[in-house]
Image 1 (cartoon, rainbow, N blue to C red):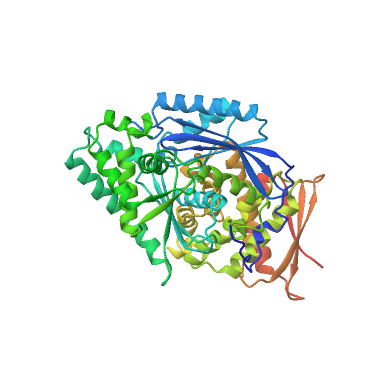
Image 2: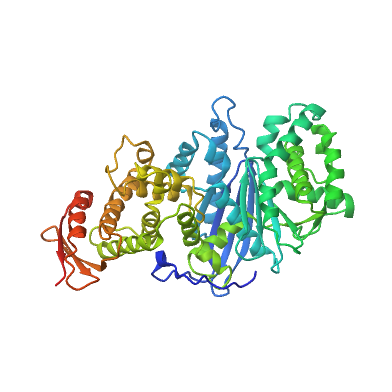
Length: 547
């Protein structure tokens, strides 16, 4: 991994130190709930290095993506199998004295109408929280995983990860990724849609090949557009499908499988030969190919087509196998969020802020104004923490992001722009956040003006009771922060809260930028906007000009 220079703009959303004390030899388990399989890696974190050592890996093929064809729902029997797998993983993690278990779910759970029900069941039965992540966020964490296991030497590499439901393409050189994409072509998904004969007939194969090519053309074009003149593109392949293809090739070419497989080179020529063999073989014949495993034989043709088309479109002759991917990326991300590897991949330690600012620029947000209101918001948060609320650093950060982006809906229209802000944030591909965190940010921005949160509003109603409380209370703080810069001229330089629990009053002292400025408009605006704050915190807000 290559050291990079931190961005010049400070991470204002993280004004407090981001380093978190983590004892030596902390044991962390990371679970990836994919479309085809559920994986777990258990590692020992060594913060003093900083590094991590893998203790064990687990994998169970559950085919979560084998959904009901009519409803798109996850099937009850597969949900049951998945819950039991997670229960077993939990026991293994506990037997290894794991201090913490983190879990994410990807496309199958994200897309299924009953995906949230599955997540809730796991929470209820196992007390295990699962974070949904978007396709681009999955790609970002795969990139982190690859960087933890390979040195890219500042040379451009395109990383491909073929999952059961999606394929991620990432372009990077060890520093900030140039391109992150996730496309709905996966080995399980396409096997169900196109492989209806055994062996696959010419009609099905032609349709499969054409579909994959069409779906990959745009992300490949995005990758190639960001390769600079004179650069030579290298390719890295990760995860089960690509490792299976490399294993079969190694046995055929070398007579055995290298240990580790990491670093093995699979040529396009050999892949083309292997694909021809696979497409002409029945399921039983594929099972007899050395290196093939039973559940992989069912989906390997579709997976091989995806890799073949990607390499062909990219014009690369070979790819290098990397045995680290999403799970290891989850570990790296966990360490980055605790400031443990700030000196390496330092651009990633500010990924949330960088992504937020990118969205703000995309939708022409007035950044000086937005930054002032965001700073007011976190100042109010800090001054009322422990007195009016007990929210922590994560919620503070969500408030910062939501306040910075609250006006992005003006890009669409001034009318009902708070509703447009919700939509743009929800679909804006914020990186570094879970799906729930993006939903919370979007809801906070949605309620920066006009109506208070109501259960008849579907996105708000779909949140848990605790998350609804978070939205109500933080949007109350946000409304005050926005009112503090009513003229959008920065007329108030700071604000101080005096909390008086005995009388259930909060004094808000305003410090004008210019001596003698009465700040009449700001004071009027705060009084107009304070209703939600007063209602949620059960206090009376008194607005005073500091003398």
